[in-house]
Amino acid sequence: MTDEMLRAPAEAKYAEELDWLESVDDGPKPFSWRLSPRMVRLFVLGSERSDGLDREIKQKWFGDRSFVERAIVTLASDRGLLLIGDPGTGKSWLAELLSAAICRNSTLVVQGTAGTTEDHIKYSWNVSMVIAKGQSRQSMIPSPIMTAMEQGVIGRFEELTRSTSDVQDALISILSEKYVSIPELDDDNIVFAKPGFSIIATANSRDRGVNDLSSALKRRFNFVRIPVVTNKKSEAEIVRFRTTELLRRHRIELEVPPSLLDILLQSFADLRAAAQSATSDDEKLESALSTAEQIGVLEDAILHSNFFGDSTLRASTLAGSLVGSLARRSPEDLAILNKFWHGVIEPRSKKDGGEWQGFLEGGRQAIATLS
Picture 1 (cartoon, rainbow, N blue to C red):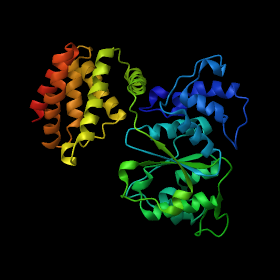
Picture 2: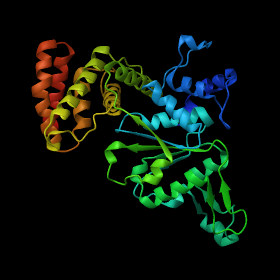
Picture 3: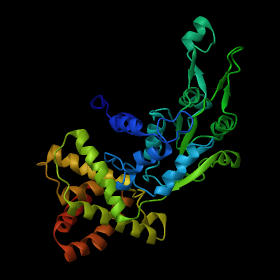
Picture 4: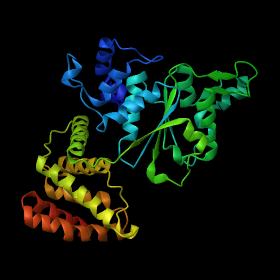
């Protein structure tokens, strides 16, 4: 089943694991939850020997345990959960995993944009049915949020601060009253939220000032701030986990040498340090230099090696993918990368040798080609 999906949701990807956890779960479950809070945490963070399970549960989200526990406790209350952080910190992935574990449905999602309207979080109408039979519950098209209310499950709202104040105000009513009125109907004109309904929203901390949340909306959410991963060991685990999934999905048999993974991690760490020491935005790459972007660079290099190489990942290919992925503005980003290559990568190549030499040359060639 999952082989027929380009990207299977977490509840499909880990269906067998979720079934097993549900079968051995004897803990108290809030509302209509499929798993107890303890098992939800195990599903997200993985099991330890002290948990006493008969099988290992792999870790799927890499971050502080307290963030996950606070998120789970919030969802067990009647408050919404807002995951906020920089791009690429795993907010959406954590929201998906929590929804999959709690209600086995992570697909009731509204994507916040400047074009998102109240209809997207409440309801709209099937025009042809309205013309033929008039307005009724049958001719109404519920939003993902309304569907979550009716089923007593988790609804998700991505990039909340990208939506306009009108949409945010409508969300206040849903979070406060836990029902939606349908004034167009005379009968059966209120949809009440069933126990278990909650909303997980995400917000990009870099979007501050786009559509800031009102004080009223903030009060309806518990905030969980997801920091950027700075620990090299944790970041390496995330990249390895995602890369393994990538290779499995594409059915690619290709080894990622640990030395190249170290080069990628060190290069991003050096780029972040350079960005922090920059005195103006003109001296910073447009990229957020997130863990997600590291994964994207590695994915690009792996696919290039598989389709246009000899199925061997080389340092020069990795360097070309890094430059190509991060050089979004021309000539600004290329000038920054060129300076970085001369000031940081070249000295590392002379000092450490090995794969760094191929990385140096591959980056130089990519910068020259794009210039």
